[in-house]
Length: 223
Image 1 (spheres, helix red, strand yellow):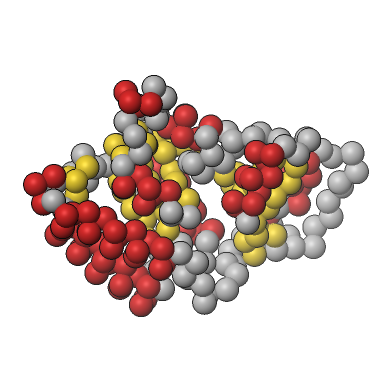
Image 2 (cartoon, rainbow, N blue to C red; image 1 turned 90 degrees about the vertical axis):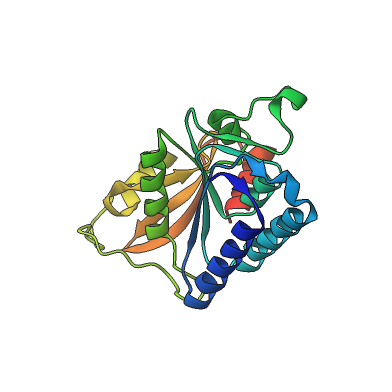
């Protein structure tokens, strides 16, 4: 939060080093006024090193970005490199070039419709809850393996699937009927998200209608 400078860059570098060494996820709460201009090339170097950290952690530990305010320029580019983005209603402003220059909106709903935000939270507290839920669904790192969640759903229960549509079928098969849908606003016919089957979290992709180019991109990005 606040203006980005060389000191913050070093702190973020140290945090990422510890996160990767310990196999711990990273959750970023992003609300920044931008760079401290008077630091000149030093702050640009800091942005570059931060992006390098995010790139090197990709596929090693989960990275979730919560956009709780303004996230612009190189910080927006960095956030786009994270695995998942959570936008916040009436708070998020997510752009590379300012809306008054491009003439386009950059609020939470627009970011979701454009396929950048996986989830949209009602407020900052809801965003934190959603981030926690995602962390519980994901392995802590690439060496942990499948996530096993103990629940009261009977692994051997019978399910009547005849005549069920895609949504109802998924609800019937998933443990406790729970499906965490992601990117819901980006191509509604193609659905992606997480659900548990027999206590094991799995990624889910299904077409609930005709497959479009946007839907195919959505599925590919999720995979």
